[in-house]
Image 1: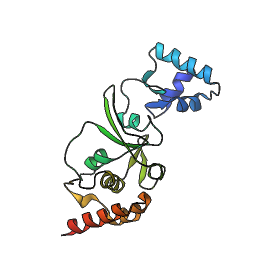
Image 2: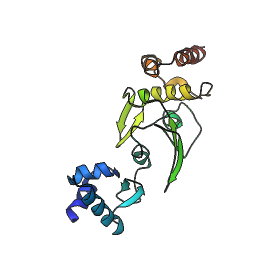
Image 3: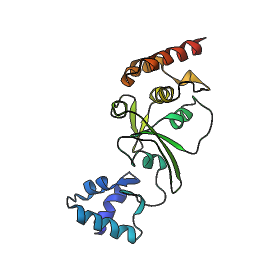
Image 4: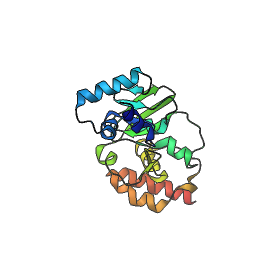
Length: 190
């Protein structure tokens, strides 16, 4: 069994779903998988973060956790916009686009999930895989934000590629969003 835990520790990932573990361990029997995972949790070699989500140890990536809890999901909104310098407010919370709205704290990580419709969630346009997590580009995060919050104030829109925003806006299937984007662009250009 020690070879199994070594496989997890050799992976660059810090957070694993039960499916990730099954693939790494090449375990197809669900009962065997659960008993092995339980064994390692009890021995302290795996940390249970949530139902079906585990970490190698307490030094796991909060961002990796954020997009491991629910599928599909990706980091967006204030988290991405702050990192891109579009907003200046600091948030310790990680904001995630997901299948439903939920706020939770797991260990050191505070998360806010905001509901996006399936046609948006399942569309990979403007979503990057970065450090074992799914994250929106600043343009996708901007569109997500004005889709849910039409009058949101942004501090610095220089970081945005307006052409990329225009190419992506159609994936929302929302004419009001197209108008909002045009309005933000018009007011920013002045």
